[in-house]
Image 1 (cartoon, rainbow, N blue to C red):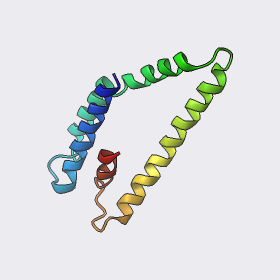
Image 2: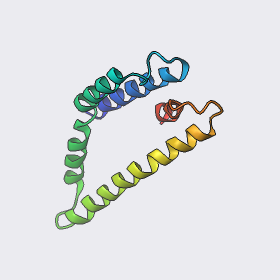
Image 3: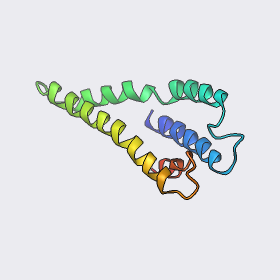
Image 4: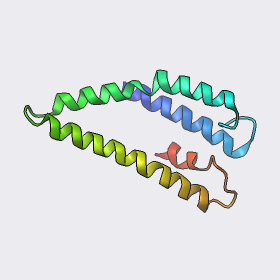
Length: 108
């Protein structure tokens, strides 16, 4: 499942990178946002339920609250830091292209 989700994320990042070089594709159109949402929901979102299951398999009995709260804090922190890093990449690029962070995401 992890490999399938990783491939899905790389495909989405590759599609976004297309938007760096051209304006027809690469998350510049409304229909691409709809396709992105459908693709993300089908191929990337299942990772959230699998990750919760994986955490529950390695959590010591009686310490569930500690592990799941740590897991939640890490998830919220990445949701907060990700947009800051992306906006810093956009601001640092000479063209101020909104698709520039896809370089970083694709490599990540």
